[in-house]
Length: 379
Ligand SMILES: Nc1ncnc2c1ncn2[C@@H]1O[C@H](COP(=O)(O)OP(=O)(O)O)[C@@H](O)[C@H]1O
Ligand SMILES: O=P(O)(O)OC[C@H]1O[C@](O)(COP(=O)(O)O)[C@@H](O)[C@@H]1O
Image (cartoon, rainbow, N blue to C red; front, side):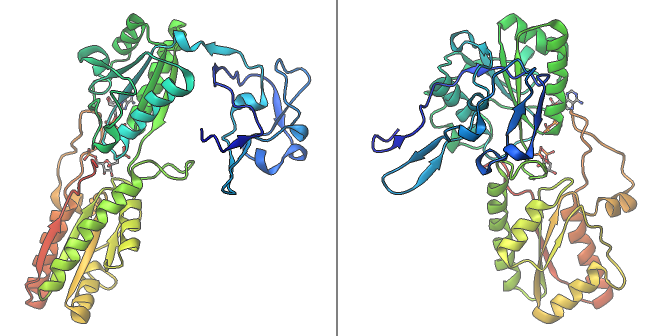
């Protein structure tokens, strides 16, 4: 810490403490103060822990000479000081695994876990499990130290690799048990989280002293309880490069339409945010909002209007949009990936073809339609 910063609170080395939610407590509005708005329990007298006197509690404020005020992140033990220590740092053997789809920032998360464990908690044994869940029993492992992870946040993807499918609960927990791992950090999307729950249940069933920490990942930013998921901003930023390319191209030819297909299997946040940020998009199609092609109010009518008005346009489409229309006309078999996720039809190519055929038949117009698909999400 900067030596010019003075602290009114003593900063102690954090410990791996255990909070048993079965301890009785009841939050009361009377004890709410602004700084404790997220967590201000009042423990009943029967509680087995001693609670800090919240009214007289000295807030963790760190002031700097430059005039700024930093409020240190409150820790559970600030409010419940005698929580039992669950792991001593020197007995921790942690592992990290990344599973499922890629997302920008995975390496940053890995780096922060390794450095946080090492520098904040004094943990020196952290293992990287390679290749997703199946890596527990079928792949190599790598020791992770602050030195190993020093530069990884500058790389795309995940240094540990990832995979779909291959979740064998019993083999995974065998591997955790055999290796003597007692903290498991699992980074991944909804499929990964379901897998982590099953692992935790099996660990509990076997009575092992192993903690399972789940780090939610979604490039789509569609987890309502968090402000923003890591990687979303990068995806939106990258999406704008594709939109910009489509705009430049479409402006350069008569009746040219740029179609940009973006990520978004079930939600259109990336498409919408990128559209709003770019100001060059004429139409944004997302899974949450059904659309149709022909007739009044249909997409084709809008395309004709925009081409008449300005001679070019950009359409952004999230990959999950219009899947019902595709399925109707393609009658394809339901296909799944190795994790059981439904594989989508390519809506970008489909809509480009539809627009070409429509324009040729209805308006004797041959628009130049080109598609920018699958922008790099692995930044
Ligand atoms: N219901 C489930 N039970 C156990 N494991 C699951 C379940 N669903 C998915 N998984 C496992 O989680 C991993 C990642 O899931 P996947 O759906 O591919 O990606 P994501 O986590 O990004 O949604 C895969 O190894 C898969 O086998
Ligand atoms: O091409 P893949 O790997 O199947 O993944 C595509 C899908 O995964 C997503 O990127 C979302 O996955 P996450 O929410 O797990 O990050 C969707 O936007 C996209 O539809």
